[in-house]
Image: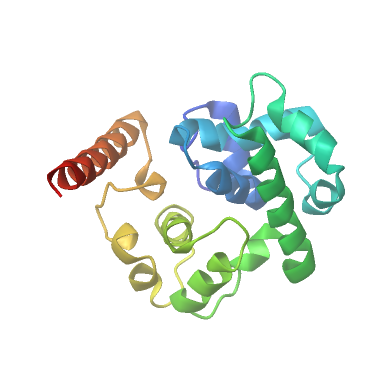
Amino acid sequence: MPALQLAQDAEADALLSRDPLALLVGMLLDQQIPMEKAFRGPAALLERLGHLDAARIAEHDPEAFCAVMATPPAVHRFPGSMASRVQALCRALVENYDGSAETVWKDVPDGLELLRRLEGLPGFGRQKAQIFLALLGKQLGVQPPGWREAAGAYGEDGALRSIADVTSPQTLQSVRAYKQSVKAAAKAAKDQG
């Protein structure tokens, strides 16, 4: 079992390392909050719910689930919309993958099919799907033929572009610096345009 260091918290990272649903939910939450906070979210949900079961989360009363997400400290800065997304993701897993997150990538024939499956999940656009595909390939050994190509630039060996490349506090800082440089370049281009 790999020892992920995405949350930079031993307990949360142990959960991510052993529970595919936790990892998928962490990736879903990785939006408009620090990466490590997003990947601590599944541990907070486990603590508050007493389980991380896709079917039970999918069936949970939406208002009550939103309250679980919003209880201080909130799991995400947008607890309402993210609660809806987590439940939609869990419903899709129940409907299409027997409630098993790992089934999304287990025994997949090639990288393009894996990318297609990930893009088919609620809350996963192309970029998020490519980043998660790169994370699976680089850190979990899920490497169907063509996985690097399907992951695009995120699949490049030695890249420090995304959560897929976070393996230590140092690499987290390198990825954060890369993201900030991309944002600064985009802002500068916009200001000149």
